[in-house]
Length: 93
Image (cartoon, rainbow, N blue to C red):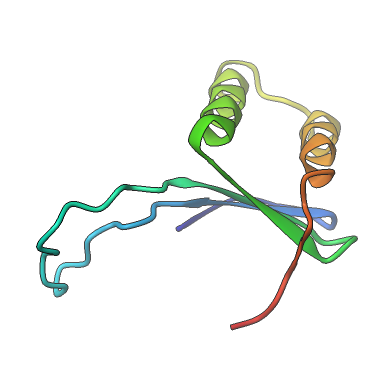
């Protein structure tokens, strides 16, 4: 898990699912990797997990930002677009 962005309104975390730990035994059957991004809208207290094609599209956006550094307003506007997908309340485990 890697924190990519944290502001007053949003948090974005990249999640490397099924990443093997050094001490963990290897599974007998292959597992499908479900890498993705979690976007938390702090204002609404909800989150969305992007995986599959959604994660690929978000990764393309991030790659574009590496070439042209966005302003905080551009980042916030982009994340605002994803906040409409956020319907899972954030809970602490």
